[in-house]
Length: 77
Image 1 (tube, one colour):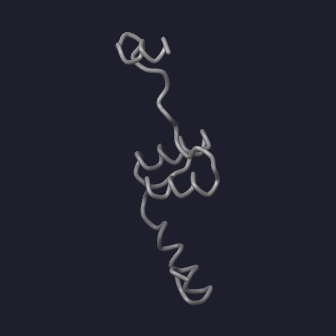
Image 2: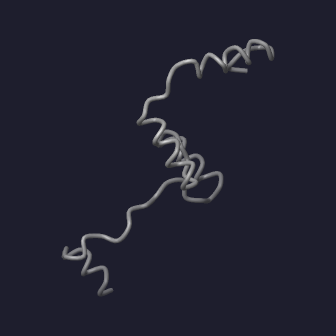
């Protein structure tokens, strides 16, 4: 109901959301998230999606600095 009380108002409000151009940055982020099946949105939204689905909603860093003492200490354990 946030877009409007009836279908005509909702339709007009929805179309108005997309009248402007999407920036290259936003377009690239949408494409990247779509291609990799990641969630597109703010951190709060991503946390809620993860809580509801039990699945990861965004990429997690890989590996580490293999030369660092912290990384070597983790490998020893």
